[in-house]
Image (cartoon, rainbow, N blue to C red; front, top):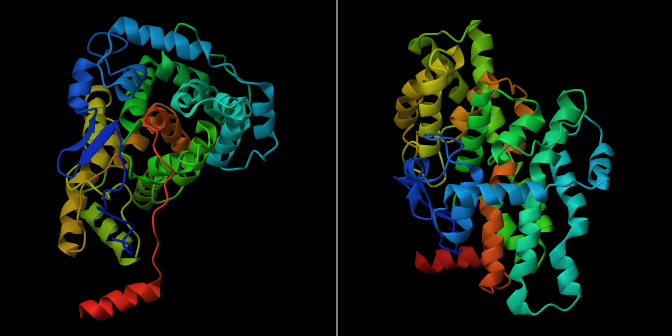
Length: 399
């Protein structure tokens, strides 16, 4: 376990969600289909509103539509961005990766940390959760505007599209990016909801918990989480999937290829020592239910899209090939295998930006846990390390 990335080592208390290897994610005990059925949407039969997921993760209770609308209104009231946050981002070259700009923006917001002020003012330990709550809600509320500014600055004309007070969180994020197609607004609601949390052991969630454990405020903890999310083996994977799919299209000149051609291309990819992006998972041993719900969304809204059809064909071809290798524990698609094609269909084609979307979403899982960490008085995280020499001695004794 020590040499294997602590895989399978139980080391954290995480309230919001749990991942079963065969069943996948459950948010406060509810599967994704159950969330889609029971949590309020923007309209009857619609995808869950991200605010409903936030309410569920924070309280463990299913909110009413009125409660969700009230939370949505509160988040909008907290969404004002100070000018210096934009200026901090502007200090970076436009060529900087969107995640670099995003982390910079979050760190700039830290200047207004309520927890830091309260701690310096001598707040009692039993009340640490209160300013943590304020910071968390302010941070979640302000992320879409910061994230949208980065997108407009890097890929468009740089003009800020103001928040629309009539829209919910996910729809507003899409709107501020520059997308107003009702289907895109609905997909953004689904995207944020399913990317919100994935128990506590993944890099971004664990990083936030770890960095907050010495009482660093939520801004500092979340900025650190974003830096973990930016790694190619974590959140950056979703941009790699679309690049890889585009490379298939470039190779054959069309997305309409046979399963034989696709199998040949995949085998060539593997023979070069490369992985098939979007397949496999550190915990899951079946198809990721987050992939499945995106596939259902695509079947409903874009069944004839050539790229979606290629993604479906990849799912048909890849698992048998990976299974034959004999070394792969999970040959099935994960959440990243599908999201890029949907975003691409609705016009968000800049794959380098995709991890920012993931980062905005992950605040919905990380934030509530930080509040509960302080409410429960969770201690400083300080595991024990071991030297290689000590491990060699242990191996020698056991043999």
